[in-house]
Length: 231
Length: 223
Image 1 (spheres, each protein chain N blue to C red):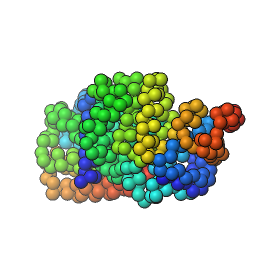
Image 2 (cartoon, each protein chain N blue to C red; image 1 turned 135 degrees about the vertical axis):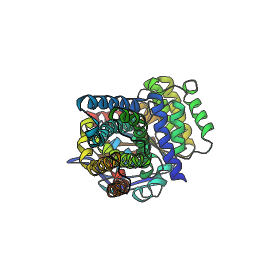
Image 3 (cartoon, helix red, strand yellow; image 1 turned 90 degrees about the horizontal axis):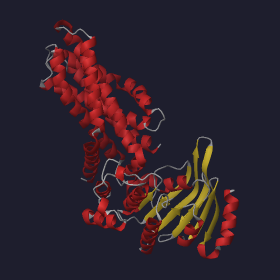
Image 4 (cartoon, chains in turn brown, orange; image 1 turned 45 degrees about the horizontal axis):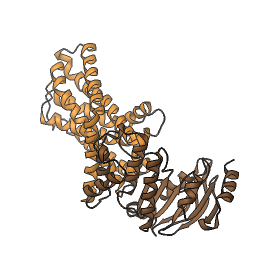
């Protein structure tokens, strides 16, 4: 479960997030939308414990990130704009390295399985620097879910993926969500966001201006609303 | 055990990455050898003054080459936001710090292993003594520790290549003075007892800078 109370984050005079109150239950699949600079990445980085709020509180899986950061990080998978992959290492070496950091049991078979699932078995011994943007993104997805996180935070995960990889990622997310994982997906793509999320949030200028269950939203009405926000 | 396992994972990762590219060691090695040649041509190091000048030349070479390596080592973590991958892992910030320090220390020691014989031949000073190697180790450890912390700060700035020496050299001054003085005392025929005060400076510096770095490293990385 993720809870945020009056969450505010400022970078100097610029307020990136302003008094966000949010609660997301375990197993929920939430889509987070908003124009560029709305604060999506900042919110995800705070929830991932990579950044500290300027004021307000966050609780992840019932724990306080300031006190129980290590335990919280064990539960979190985070996919951001950067792939977090070492260009100098092979695809397999990258996953094995992260498997050691997360104490993944049966690391070898887990790495083999994930490389298979993201279609990189044949390229496992290739250095990451030789992979295309799309293949790197597939490997980054594998890294994010390697340790079987209970909470998955995804920041524009479809960037750079070809249609085949988009389908594979969608299948993976549906599978992960089906096993009770909380997913918070930040995306610009209205269709995909509404297709996957069971709840939709919209951030604008650091404020949470929209929070509704998916079943109460029609594509047309939401598209009009969202165009108004982004224009 | 978990702390040690993760620390070793960070070190192994740095070694594996370096084995694939050799970008850090080769840059440090070429730079230090060129610097050494320039010094040997620029300074007329006949036996009478070699013992006086040699320690300064040796440590200047180690420091400049080490700065190159430190820059690249932390830049590697910055590329593709790999540093976020480390910070996201369920491990203490101190394991990341010690892992990076150990990697940087190892690369510097490897370069020194090539540098010292050449230096001894060019300058005619005997560096292959346990006491000199101990001073080299202590000085390098202190420099790698403070350098790793400063590189973590500099790597987030635009002009990181310039910023690192600007931040690092003033803070590294005590370890450099201690290392140069201790090395000088030893190459001019003294024993460890004769340079004990400078060795103590190195040990205290290493302990203090490691303690300060452990407290501040997490804040530096998280920004």
